[in-house]
Amino acid sequence: MSSDFEAYEQDFGTLTAEITNKIGRIPKLGGKEKTQLVLNVDKQLEEVRELMEQMDLEVREIPIQCRGMYQSRLKSYKGEMEKLEKDFKRSRIAYSDDVRNELLGEDAGSSESQRAHLLDNTEKLERSSRRLEAGYQIAVETEQVGQEILANLHSDREKIQRSRDRVRTVARAHAGHARAGHEPLPS
Image (tube, rainbow, N blue to C red; front, side, top):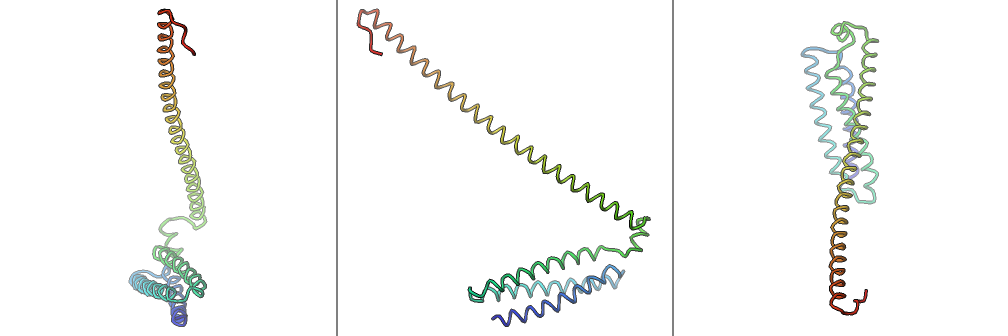
């Protein structure tokens, strides 16, 4: 079984190397050439996904005592696959420096500066959002505590009123008993 896995690994290595090479060429192309290469890479990525599924099935068939090593290798390949897919996505929308500068009408340094500024602002916005979310959570928790306190106070008020009513009832009974000329009731 592990020999099948190793054969899949070799195929994986070959395919990912080809894909990496093609991904590097995509941004430099245009028109039909770019479209054709993108379709080709997309097809090869699908082949890699199928290979990963086969490797996953093979790992499940390996005895448990040997499985850990293969699972760790498979996990590493999955990470590599995710990176390839991200690189592919970026390469499809990337333009060569000349085209980008022509479209933006700016030099690349200014573009990088703006990008850094945008990233900085995005990070600040995310931090502020997290603070707002934490503040909201505290407000919700405070409201819940307040509701519990009000419920407890209401319950305590009812207990006090019942106790006061019992004291009044006992006091009246005691007073009525004393008027009738009887000995006072034991307390």
